[in-house]
Image (cartoon, rainbow, N blue to C red; front, side, top):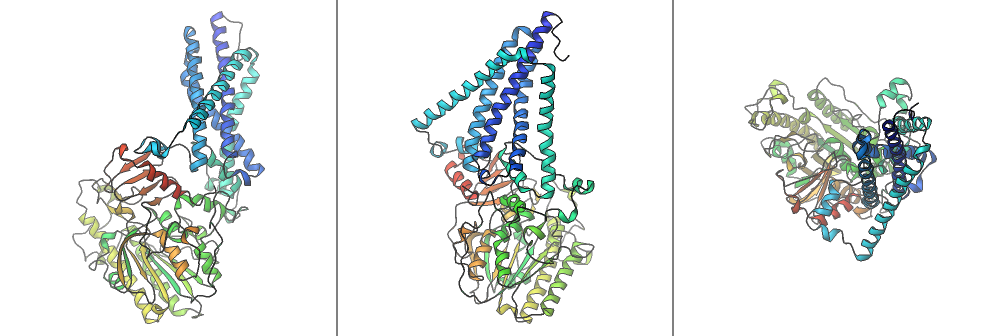
Length: 625
């Protein structure tokens, strides 16, 4: 028997205490479950909810409620089992914890309904940062409402206490076992279900997981493939919800276009991990010379500090914080859709694979027979190969009257690996990228010179492309974009950051940007621009879209100097709002780090809560209201 009352009185008291605690814990978990269910009911997922998604969420929410209550039960209640005189203290402490946990859950529900994310560092800084009292204004009616809600939660908490004391005597060993089985089932079954849903692209299950706070659902695509649960050809492709936005609206309004436009070819020449300091006549003579014939934007920021977000922002015109929503639903970039509608031939020439990150389906999912891989043993070989292949494509196009879009993506600057004969231009230079030697006191010049030698070589390849375009007479009817997907840091901020994906300073998000447009007057522009601006600029000027840019993008026309006072960069887990001399970075753990542009920490009372709130609203502009 799990509860044997035939022993001494002391043992009986302990058993009764555990019975009350068990019933208290189960009722408190149900109380929290009701709040978690209200998150879903009040969310934008509710109107398109399928039965399977709702059932999955109910079980997952129960498991999450169990886990949230488990910590105070184990820490505050259970230890007093062996301290008979203090058992009432344990019950009081657990009661207080349950009350506070439910108050927090209620406040979190309000935050989630307003901002589409749960309480994290941004919310705390909005409330307690500079000007927080201007963001959250509580009038007397609102305060009274809050007091009434608090009293209602207290009433339910006391009702749970009453139930625990009144009916604990009826708890049996069988009921406890059922409770344990329910705990295990609600914690494990939703995770396994989500692992299958993520592999099979069951969107109705995946999207509702966002409603649960601190919930990290399992993905196991490789294991699902290995076990034969799904087939490789079905991975991400068999998506029954493709095209259904559900949680977001993109575009905000249907696109309208002018009756006819002159078709122009569009060519993207993208350098992975391009450090702005190499954009000089010494290091990139061909690109700089072409810049003299183009529009050069000297304050251009990537949409991320990594490839995934940088390319996403370049094609979609919105932040990669939406990556998971677009990946789940299969919604394609409006830019690519409009190219296809206008009869463009779309070709990709990427040195690195387009399978991981999966740009072949996120960006080019509607393009038939897209090229995903390039043969070659090294990035150096593959960069040469894509250049040769693109030059051959320009010579061998079957229909020269058909407009084309080409995506040429170089990888050598990301690899920082080049044969010895090409390492002579900039000295002293490392022979290879020795990442184990990197530290804050290291002289970065030899490593940076190796990188510059790589940039010099890639520049020569870009020069070949430009020369071929000119020789074939294509500069008269082609738009050419030359930029980087993101930057590459060499400890410029003296904080021991190298590479990319680790901070949002200029070293990792500031990239060169050149736009060549037939008939444009060459010039250098100093206003801030970003990857978000590329799509609306080309949609308006080349594809004839009449909608305002904010209907389908977070950017503006590149030549428009009016800008919001912040720039959003990053991905769903780690993103930042970059302002004039302040960077608000949301870390993976949910906390916020505030620094100046050189990554020096700033005190929290310097936070402009009003501006931060506007930035959050900007980030959520395509989410359903």
